[in-house]
Length: 300
Image (cartoon, rainbow, N blue to C red; front, side, top):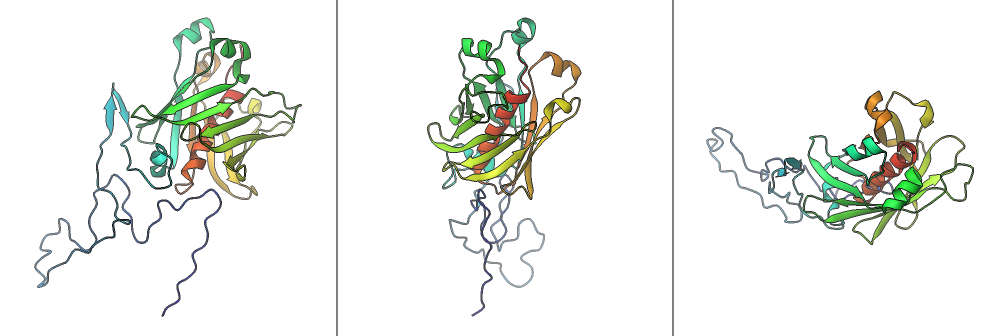
């Protein structure tokens, strides 16, 4: 009997939720049963009949069930099928390795300086909306505490279900107080913590740790000196715990002088490994929002 080679264990924070033996057709493409010939001229003229193999139900890739959904002129990403061991609503993240976050511009905020709740579109690279995020903070807190305010951000899917909740408590925003640094809790579904974003003290550089629900370190985030990064994209590298390998990136995209100077509307891009645990992908989204408030929201 041939010995099977041992398969290496996955690094912490990575998931085998999509790994199945053999070839797997990506979701959204026509599915052909192995052993059949689809659309091949003369496939039955070789003197034998091709028999279709039975595929175990647990390995079968679901057929195309959904097309992009259009609601009020907005194209939403098709709803993927539910997956085992995946929090409801996070199955969208199993299909993508890059997302774009666009903050919506508020005209009243531009004209009056009155701080309103932030709203964001979260899209895939095809421009389809994956989630919609909205801040839920009291008026007095927004306008008195400014970018340092505590907040709750609720992220909903195209069915209107709240699938991710981000909670940031009130913390000191000065680097000279290392005992009271920034932190964010990520819940999916709401009420169930799946991870944390914790600021690490550094005299001048932004540094964070991504932790799982048990407070174990999974990834590190390291950024440049933000005030020295004017007129360019600002990249925050996502690295392994020992910081020897870069596995992703959170990028603040430069949108032009006028928009940067007179609005708080920011654009971000997030890249992560396709096989990263969806919970850690959700925590990376939370890290992006925390970075936005800490470094790119304009104080009054």
